[in-house]
Amino acid sequence: MTVTRKIAECIENSRTVKVYLDDEKQPFAEFRPPVKFVLDTTKIPDGKHRLKIVAKSSNNLEGIKEIPFEVRNGPEITVVGLKPNEVVEDQLALTLNAYGSETRGEFVVTGSETPKGIPAWVWAMVIAFIGFALFYFIMYSTQEFYNSFF
Image 1 (cartoon, rainbow, N blue to C red):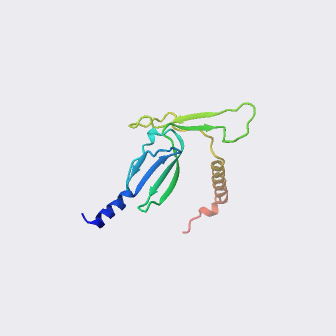
Image 2 (image 1 turned 135 degrees about the vertical axis):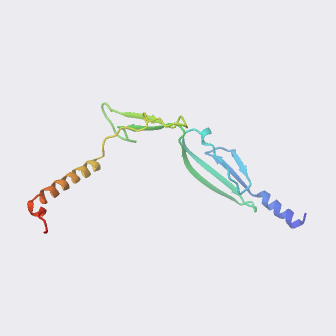
Image 3 (image 1 turned 90 degrees about the vertical axis):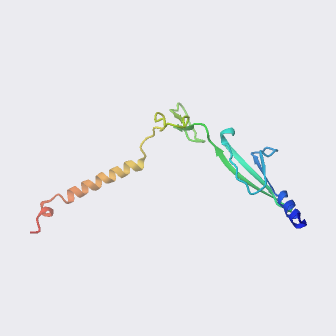
């Protein structure tokens, strides 16, 4: 082996990438770049997390990149009747629903949709459509519009 090849290998071996999860002191993975790996989120609890990647170059300079992400492997939980930081009083009627993909081979229809009221904009569109239909019927329901050109 030539000296330049040994130097190139030594430089190549000094490059590392360490991957940390949240505020852990020890990395859960260490690689030589470039690398592809699979992050198994089933072993991470649901909630907000941060992936911290520390890369060391061949001349021992470090670069850090942090990527926030959220894990949700459990069922989706929806609450109708209470919004975050809302001020409430007396009794509060809530609708709770939790649904997820517990079975991989089939889709369970029961409970997969949270019942909600029809939005106001849909009612406005229906009223506008009916109003236009009535206007059109009244304006063009006279005999003069149905005479033949021949």
